[in-house]
Length: 106
Image (cartoon, rainbow, N blue to C red):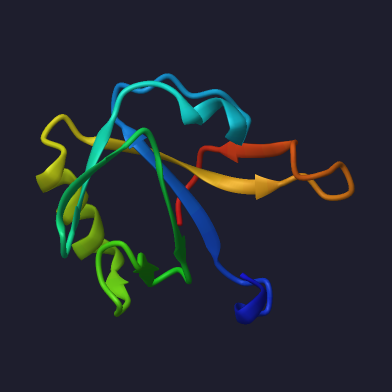
């Protein structure tokens, strides 16, 4: 995000039926979701990507930006039960251990 002048968001994806906490550290356990990579399908408890508001940037999937709608379609194809997401929001002046995950759009 620093390279974009503070613009954009980090989006954390999990399976649609995942239980969400409001802090980042708590998403590291639970059900797995699938992400297709050039090496094949990989399984993750969560998957974080950057968006500038139009494209997702996910080096696991592609070296090139992927349109948001195309990326969401891919995730849903790999995860027929669907995916859910939260926006990664660092808490200023509190420290890296307090990072909030908020519902919202990209």
